[in-house]
Length: 333
Image 1: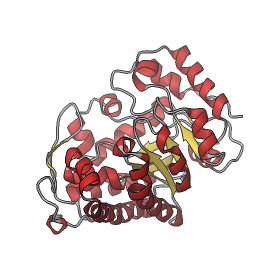
Image 2: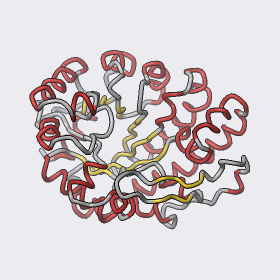
Image 3: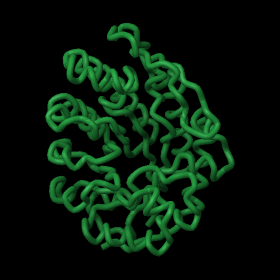
Image 4: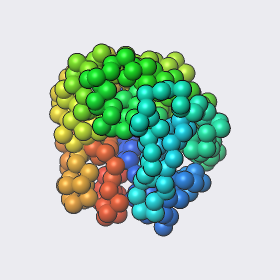
């Protein structure tokens, strides 16, 4: 059974040989091939090389395009600065000092430079790993992209002061995310991750009224196009789980502070849970044996469907043997 068969089989409730492993690796990936983070984020060929080397060297199951949250934001007109040792920096949020949506550029997955780089990375992944590994593309969720365009502080104030504007802005973000997701699926992605990190900081009421309907539209479009929808909201989402259950997502990343047994009860037996050891204290600063035992304990608590993954990105300083312990096969139940 190869990685793709294992991955799809677990999502579909089929018997697989071992639990799929999908660690989030960005800074670690760049370092693994001695590349700067500027090159990893700015040159799709470097990103592809790093991720291809990682799946071969550690034996996990997914090729990924994650590097930073600014690909769509630059398509809307933001300027960024590439940094050698960390994620690019946004020099100016396009709507930092305005609510005029007409000021935004019109992103295009096949013409906006950084979005096109994602498409090209997936095209290369298809050449080297089509139906051998899972290929996962990414888009920003409605709240996250709106915050990227306005700046976090402005966006959080807008939620209270100007819901009409927030809705119009998120609708524009979802329109772009749909086009971006469909392009990635067309080129070979079997899964689209939806990164909506800022949503963990929003009240349940606001999430239900403003964010959930837009996330649902994106999820449904991805699934109708033949892709799997994976939700990634960093932080504590215990208070949002009853509403997330309405999304009918395929896969959800759970950060280390999420109650995994509660997540299983609320989201049900068909959603693939991933996570949720603390990437710093329970992976980077841990031992191989504790890491293996930690994931085995989580798996036996939540059962299938499940993917091995830390709560979020594996830190760059993680010892190689600790990442290998995370990737060591756990026999599937």
